[in-house]
Every structure is written in structure tokens, then in C-alpha cells.
Length: 339
Ligand SMILES: NC(=O)c1ccc[n+]([C@@H]2O[C@H](COP(=O)([O-])OP(=O)(O)OC[C@H]3O[C@@H](n4cnc5c(N)ncnc54)[C@H](O)[C@@H]3O)[C@@H](O)[C@H]2O)c1
Image (tube, rainbow, N blue to C red; front, side, top):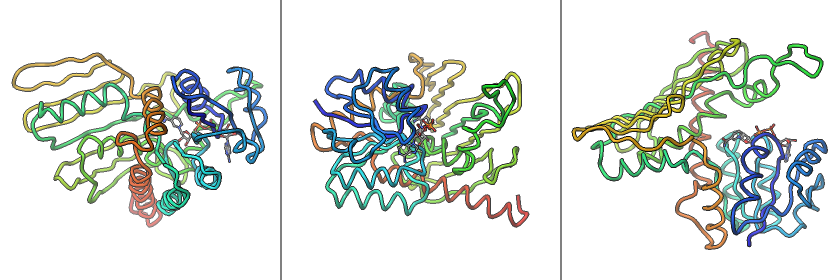
């Protein structure tokens, strides 16, 4: 049994990581850490946890084999440095770091400490993502030439009602926009999928986008990537698609265009199919997230001392670097009046 500690008891820990950690054979959720006593109390009571710490040293002394980092992105580096000092393996939520330099420091400090570092790109583990990879490996659509990965939504909306019923700015969306906006926060998943499915590194990219809302970062972005094998990927990502609408809608799709066919995934229509000269082949739909399979691989990695399946620190670095550079490039153009 491997004992895992969790750092950051917020939203994704509550709906994703904690329930899965409590239900993965071979893993024990040994302790949780959060600087906010209210969040600690909330998860401790909700999940009946024995060990909950505001004190980092006490958390690391609680008998852990590894930690999972689910704090906000600006805290990931300090959490990983602390885990390295304590000699604990790490699975860290995306985006791995705020900058390429931060990610390099994470890779360096975990390497120096002799501990493993993985990035929590859980989309890779969806049965849909794995089915798509299998179709590609089988040559079902010939050579993959172009990917369209679209996720445009309102990031929970511009405003929400506070406890007094007054309409106020949505702090969660504000936080994500201040951390870099949708490409940095969410688009890293799609960038990672493009690298995963093509099996080919991104060699160059161009970007365009828009400021629908009033934050520093662009809130609707397009990223076109050229892979080493010649394939092209397009990511469209937005946090301002219906951000002020009473009845918001969203689009979440993958289209993979090959020399001999097409693969389509549509979350809202619940479609996963492949069509080629032999016909249309439909597979059961699955949501894009799969924390359970990710933790099964994390357990295996802890038991076996490595993994050739889990996204690495370098995978996290590449997605963070591309998304951040594309966002920064667009912001620089915008400042010069070019966008
Ligand atoms: N994989 C996914 O599908 C997915 C979905 C949502 C969020 N995320 C990622 O998960 C991370 C957390 O997102 P969230 O939406 O749960 O955020 P959140 O703001 O809801 O929760 C963050 C929690 O971390 C705590 N925290 C603050 N500083 C900390 C520190 N120094 N050390 C440890 N904990 C600290 C906060 O008190 C809070 O409880 C982010 O990196 C986000 O991008 C991933």
C-alpha cells in the first residue's frame, strides 16, 4: 500500500482527486494539507479524513510515500520543492508551472532528490483518448495530418451571486484569467493531447486571439502547431463563450483528419466515431477526464519505480511553455495595438 498526501483541498481535489484516492486499490490517502483552515475542515468532514494539516512540516512527517499537488498553479513550484526536500514522489496538476523556468526548476529539484515527477494530464486516460490513440496506431484513418481540438466555454461565467445574493465578479474565473487565461490554464490539456496523439514534438506555432472581456490575458485564443512529423494541430480555447449569458452553451470537440478517414469526438452530442472507406465505427462515449485511471498508473509507477504511460515533468513543461509563450506573444502584439 502506497501512502499519498494531497496538497491543496480545493475544487478539483474535492470532486476528482480525493474521491479517487480513497477508492484506488493499493493507494491510501494518508494526509491532506491546505493553508486555509476552512477548506481543511470541509474536506476532513466530508470525506472522514484522519490527518489534515495546515503545518507543512507535520504533513510531510505523517508517513508519506508520495504527494499529489492540487493547489493553484502559482503554488506548484513551492509545493514540489518542499516535496523534493522531503524525498516524496510527485503527481502535479496542470499547468505544471507558471513559466518554462519554473518547470525546469521542478524537473531539476525532483531529479536531484531522486524522486519521480509526473504531470496530471488526466485527459490522456479517458477511454475516448485511448481509443483514439488505438485507431491512430492501427492506421484506421491513414496518416494523421490535422487535429482540431476545441474547448470554448464561459469558465463558470463572469458573475455569480454571493452569500447575500448580490451579483459579484466570479473570483474563480478572475483567478484563472490572472494566471494567464484559457490557453495557459485549460489549453495545456489539448496541447498535451496533440503531442500524445501525433507522437511528435511541436516544432513551431502561430497564434491569434481576442479580448472579449477586460482581463490582461486574451480570453479567446487559437493556436496552430506544426509537429516534427508534418502534422498540424489547431487548439481553440475560450473562457468568454457566453460568459455573460443567462443560458450558456459550450463546445468541446476533437476532430482528427487523416489521409484515409476521420475521427470525431463531441462531448455534448456524446459522439465517438471513426469513419473511413469501410464505413462508420462507433465506440461508447466517455467523458474527457479520467482521474481513476491516472491514479492506477500513479500507483503502478510508485510500485515499479517508473512509468512509460504517465505524462512526465517534460510533458508538463512543453505544454506550459507553448501555452505561455503563445499567450505572451499575443499580449505583446495587443500592447502594440496589433490585435
Ligand atoms: N485536471 C483537471 O481537469 C483540472 C480541473 C480543475 C482544476 N485543475 C487544476 O488543479 C489546480 C487546483 O485548481 P482548483 O480549481 O481546485 O483550485 P481552487 O482554488 O478551488 O483550490 C486550490 C486549493 O489550494 C489551496 N492552497 C492555496 N495555497 C496553497 C499552497 N501554497 N499549498 C497547498 N494548497 C494551497 C487553497 O486554499 C485551495 O483550497 C490548478 O492547477 C488547476 O489548474 C485541474
